[in-house]
Amino acid sequence: MLHLEHINLVVKSIPETLKFYQAAFPHWRIRGRDTQIWYGNARQWLHFGDDYQYLTFNDGGTGANRDLQGNSVGLAHFAFVTQNLEALIDRLKAAGFERTKSGEVLPQRKNTYFVDPNGFEVEFVEYLSDIPQERNTYQESTHCSQGVTI
Image (tube, rainbow, N blue to C red; front, side, top):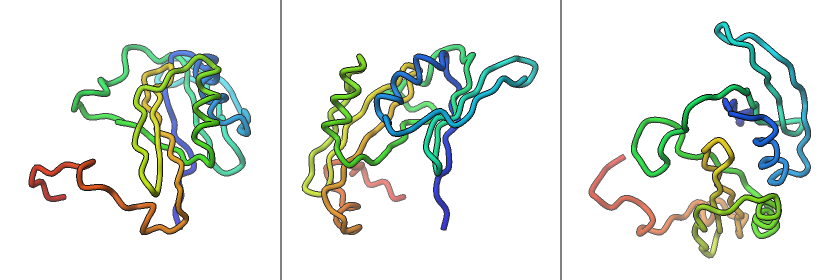
């Protein structure tokens, strides 16, 4: 079986980035950090997570992230499952972050979106069912109905 181990992100500021993710994941910790030369440029990196998965932050990012409302190639968003969506929203708001989209409330799940300090959109999902067929059910109105076959 495969599972996602980490996501590696280039960020503008590790401390500002940590403020967001520490509010979202208070049980995670800094697993390691160092400085390295990356294609001729010195940068710091940091691993933030638990024993099984983590996020890597590399500082020195420049420029703007992709337009989240556009169709340019790039990362649209990544998502995490939470056991208590309201508590997570409260922690992020207390840390000074506002939701960018409230998401859906369906019988099987609810979700919301935030944008981190680097312009990465992060979705948080709370499943209200343990049955995979229910968790993975989508309403027709939430997806493309333009006759596109995938």
